[in-house]
Length: 184
Image (cartoon, rainbow, N blue to C red; front, top):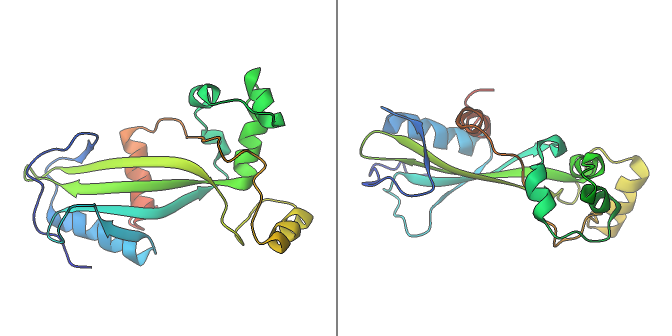
């Protein structure tokens, strides 16, 4: 990966300040760490290789059902699934157990550096079904059955989307540093 050298001239909407009085060196350290950690580092659509903005993808947290944003989960369409029916009476236990067992929390970070020497971040997280062959926490019979089917079958409907609770700025910083293999 070519090291970016052209800071953004403006502070784009949707980003928050991660560090003030930062440096290009810090941006390079995070991006190179992400590549060493096996994350996908790519250009933001429309940017050149010199632009100091990159998207870091591929960081997941397993067994993260407890981080469910309960308020947003209640706003989703309720379908006939036991965990979602329990959700209608504000019993989040079955849904959190299902998310913990069969889903991982996937993160995407867009990291940028501005002319004002500010390191900024736009981040998102969403629950996704474990990829084939990486189903963890299921009993052996279920894992064998899923492997035989070649695709783990989620017990929740595909139309249901679940998101974690809101993270603080410091929590996002820790997640980014873990994704980049900088500090644990």
